[in-house]
Length: 177
Image (cartoon, rainbow, N blue to C red; front, side):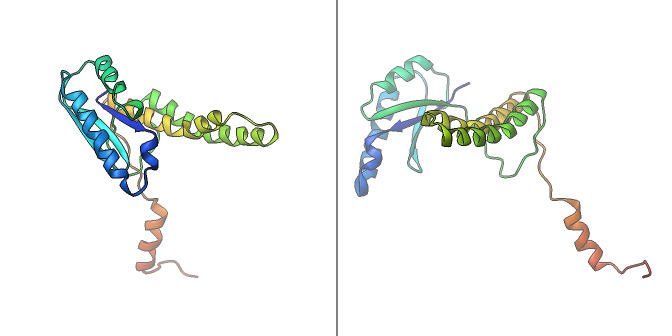
């Protein structure tokens, strides 16, 4: 199931112009730590993030334990990668995916209400951060459900009225006014 890890680091992110040196060194240490484990791993630094990808089976607990011993790592986030489809998808699909998409539409409403409450009575920041990311979580969970069930995602198509006006302007009118 889990094939990748997002590696979070702390103080390296504030290192200025030589930040890449620290990131490269951390990437090297992660690679060295994973090299001695069973499984084939690649460690990639991309857009200010470090990912460890497994191309074969591995012992999850052993990998997490090895990564926790690498100096400079602030967090280890297991990931399930979902391919970017490059287009908008319509909600629906399996019953579970449809419910997750519905929950995704309700989450922003809950977020607005929490912000209103927050203005009157301060809420912990972690709650506001969580609710802000909740709709994204529901979206990813719905896509994951669709992939697990081998269900094809329905692509969004432009509305017919946009094409209809272009077609009707090029055809002669038949009605009399």
